[in-house]
Amino acid sequence: MSTKSVAKSEKSCHFLTGSDESEVKRHAQQMAAELSPEGSGDFGLETIDGAVDNVDQAVTKIEDAIQALLTVPFFGGKLVWLKNASFFSDGVIGRSETVQGSIERLLECVKAGLPSDVKFLISAPEADKRRTFYKSFTKLAEVQVFDKPDIGFGGDESALIDFVAQRARDRELRFSEDALETFVARASNDTRQIDNELEKLILFIGMSREIMADDIREVVPTTREGGIFDLSNAIAKRNLALAFQTLTQLLRQGESAVGLLLAAIVPTVRNLLMVKDLIERNRLTIPAQAHHFSGILSRLPAAATSHLPRKKDGSLNAYPLGIAAVNCRRFSLAELRDGFDECFTTNVQLISSQTSEAVVLQRLLFKLLAKIDK
Image 1 (spheres, rainbow, N blue to C red):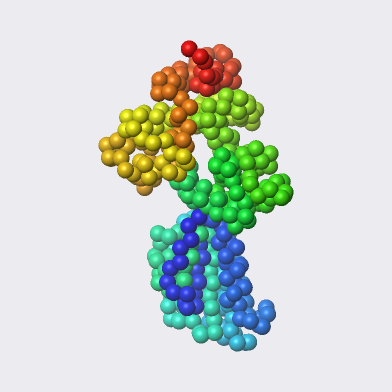
Image 2: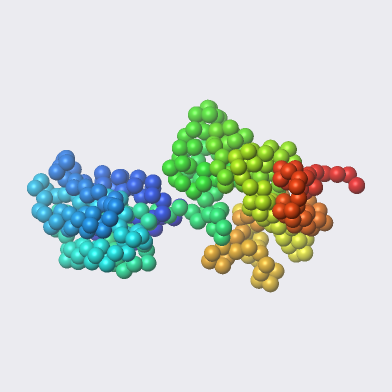
């Protein structure tokens, strides 16, 4: 999660936003408590619910906020909180010209200057940062942004790893590396879910403060993404028994065999093959941990890494490659080349063969992972 503060804290207007809705709400609640005048009770806080269903409701809420800001407080100051405002996002309501006009009037009210005893707090998850109003608020208000780490295709899994590790340290918990990766895959990047699952783990492990991968599998329910990670991780670690077990579970959950092949098996084998070849070709040191590999890659010439997968911003998607780098010692280059060819053959079999899809994938996993003396 990224947290960014813009402008100066002495400003009387505060704007909280970001893709991490639970964090926006949590910090807004804390800030409302801090900014409300002491001893004023309910008279010192005027809350306007900005979660709306249509344009008319949005305009009404914005006008209510303007009137509240212009109304002189009775008891020595007040805070106006426009809470959970949904009309700042990039949706049908937020794009309405009528709503945009109302937001402009709100901006003009803030630009004109608030009374010295009035403070204004806006909490608006998923506000559209491209719009003029957002740029204006960065000049008029103290802005804090709470974004989820960007994960998934082209994302940065290492940011989420770091985020979860810090949440655990805040609770004096330690993860083994395998456990941390497994937890992230199962809990996704939702802050509320991450915190809930950590609390469950605290109860499960008791006096121990170290969390192992088996603890995660016992306590944290798997999602589709978590199951795919478990299958990919089992392949990378050349753990045939765990790979069979995870495959069976995913198929029972209704996952498509072709989908599992293309989402979990092929990318894992491809990353192992690319990294194994890169390490041997450039005589690189195998990293002790996955996140160390980005530094190794950064020292290579651009031509050596031009074929590697990249994130949305064009930089190398180093963390999945780091996982492959840590585990590629378990395979020979020839095994990985043959394994990648077997993935293609399996894809054809899944489409054209009458054999059970489970059997086809089990055969592939056996060919990839079984250690056969030659």
